[in-house]
Length: 111
Length: 114
Image (cartoon, rainbow over the protein chains, first blue to last red):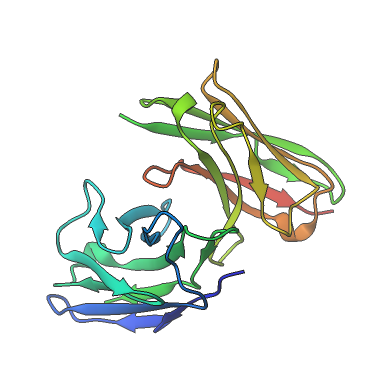
């Protein structure tokens, strides 16, 4: 199985400051169709997960533009340009290229 | 508006069975690959399994920990996704979500305990 490794696992940020979460995969995530299926999910306390980013850098509708994704091959990053109180929660990367689908351990973001 | 509503969770003894349902609305259910994801208490997200569309053969794939015990099915006439869980273990305890990745249900809690 593809192992997804996130860092840091916990992140304490200042309101208005940027934040960055790293995700590394144990295998290349290039699909046979040429796409890289790397997603980012946000899970606020007590809520269901919500996808923010798909295929490395595409923002879902409703996801604020303060969230951006980047990366290639096996190294990926989620950035929050200016952290707000509503961004508190756990963020997960997930690969959708190989079976079984696998998630990172999660990064807890707190203010 | 897309809605996914899970139901069927509850308390069950080890070795028991449970069937979860996920009622879908607001999108073409028959055209969507559907997935179950679970989350043990205080833990991260774990992919459980996926079912393709009928046109894609309704093929299913499962995570190793549930292979042979869990079965995913769908009823496109009722816009409903199912997860049949047999031979339940304590480690199957958690919230079970149905999702098509861009939308998630609210989850249903399964507790396996004697």
